[in-house]
Length: 389
Ligand SMILES: *Cc1c(COP(=O)(O)O)cnc(C)c1O
Image (cartoon, rainbow, N blue to C red; front, side, top):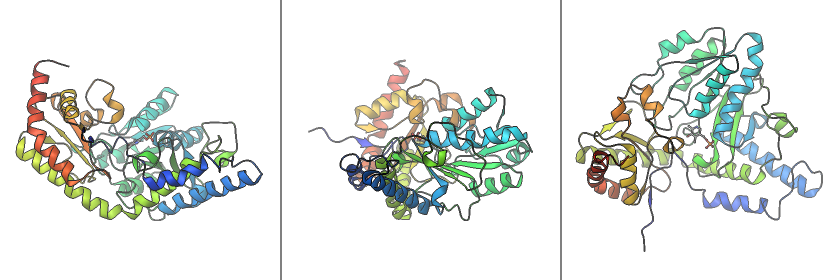
């Protein structure tokens, strides 16, 4: 029998937990009602949907009416920036400030804002990928509608100082958004003590289903919906409610939080073992954001003389699933925009490999990858040298 693949791509997606699936199933079959229907099936679905919203709110320290269900992290980022921007631009605040290491769901929204007649400001990051606070300070004038900085970077794992960024940007009258898709379940998040305005979550990064996410939208935040056509979610995001997935998201969020500290410690030990083993066997490997505060589940490295495609092919042949930069980038050519913004030289960035750990990762997985890594690098160097790509 072929052994199961070793999955080191948890930053791209995670398997749904068994409890999540189990909680969701009846809402596709016997309990299929539309929450907007007034009959018993509708009322039952409405009650379950509202309860899921309350449970997610509780995970963040938010009020239930501050949670908007969306189709995922990408949509939450879009709504969080464009919803407030489209209101505030009329009052002369037409700029969106962000950093070049953001997920495309933020970066391309900022580009869109510029194309739609607003202003986009990208604040440079340091060599580890952290926003340069003195430059952020300079970018935050009275034209800024929204400042968006991702909490944990999905390619490098680097942690931004979101509390400090929030304090600075709020003092300048900007609204503050954070993409917390990778941070939820890793860092403690409590919107009662962190005065952030909006925050994005995604189900499939935390053991929930794909196609569901949440937007925390603080009470009183100026906001215009992007979609029209219904009063669902108080008109902030119309469309028939995805009851099953909302419940799945609530269960995934609660379970993830319950294991947060223990999982951090476990993954950090695994990541450190893997990093040490790789550096011992391939001493010229370069760890990205290695000296910065990093989340424990992401290890991003480059091996000189290889390229990402060759490494990934060699890993895949050995039964290891990993990625170059972000999943979204794997299909496209060109080095990571995140590493480029950190000033990583092009040839090194072209060899980047992201190993991301999570619920499936075991000691045995890490030991196996460490064992095969030198051979894989040799193979990848031959492939790269032969110009296979
Ligand atoms: C995966 C991811 C997203 C996109 O979330 P989807 O639910 O897949 O749309 C956004 N931001 C970060 C940091 C991510 O890792």
